[in-house]
Image (cartoon, rainbow, N blue to C red; front, side):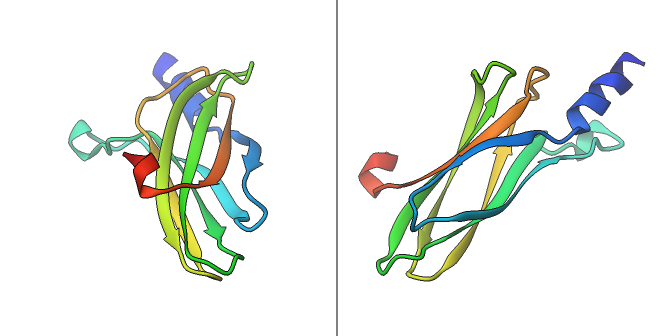
Length: 123
């Protein structure tokens, strides 16, 4: 019964607390997805959940974008962080898919931040 309770808690979707991005980089369609447990450990994926969504470059120049997802507890303390990078031409949309590898029972929400970056900053 305890394992079923833990599974039920893990499958309840978390709410997105904040989305921060530059005006020319709007975010849309973001979702928190819990990966279903497989029938055996050999089929298990190396992550328990992921956040997906889309960023659009409404500017007039190519941009390198870093999308950061932070998993938060009830007090908005960061429990886990993951990121994805995208190169977007003017007017282009790009999808992000950020996997969260460690199950965190205390997770209550998540946040997304999108920032312009450079290759030097990613190193």
